[in-house]
Image (cartoon, rainbow, N blue to C red; front, side, top):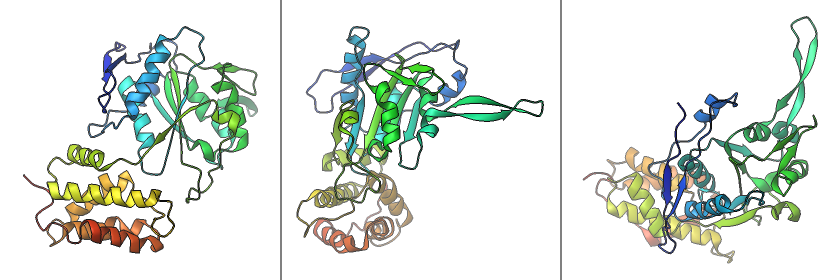
Length: 335
């Protein structure tokens, strides 16, 4: 029995916009050969996820898309931000809330367009011979049915991949296959993308997007979360974490990432603290060293410093001395 659409409400965390209510997607079992596979690709909502505004912006565009007249060129959304800001997680959670199968396809320079679009392959015909059959690539497979397709690392893709996607992203709204078939962009498919900034940082393989390709996207910046937002994330994920630890971790992350964004080469670091370190590694370190005299210091040395470039260690330690100096002696978790 297929599920029925149900309303989902998105709230502006800044308190400026009105709540937006959208119905979830549903799709019939008939006509989809991979129905059960697609159902299995619908992600579960993360109970610890904190929306700092991106989901609400996605919902604003989704509402406009649903209200526009048929035939209007759809808007495709790309999120640009540094490593560890949670770009892909934002998009995945949007798919989870709208009940769309989620396909994340990394567009690295080593991935060929035949892998993404598809190719003709030889198969045995059961009589000692072979026959050729078309086999969909990752992108084409996602476009065949309801999906939220996240083209990750847009500015690391090769030129042949970008040009192959041009028609899909403009008014033509279709992907032309070498077989002569055109796979049209369905009404229940959403296209998203992510990318790292193109600057002097160590994002190997990235490049400035072709202007014609970039013009086919609405590109939004994803900033590092501020202290208040990090505190909210930690408190939701670890409600038993003692307040001093929440405060110290939030301030450390904010100060390090402010240094990462600095234009002064004498004071900036080359490695930011990602949300993976803040929400996963550091709390795990606190659990590991809960019985030590300074659990936060032990977690910092074990779970943070090994992930950064050696020439950043001095600055990280300077930030530690300014923000913490000596961590709390009390247990990191408890009533």
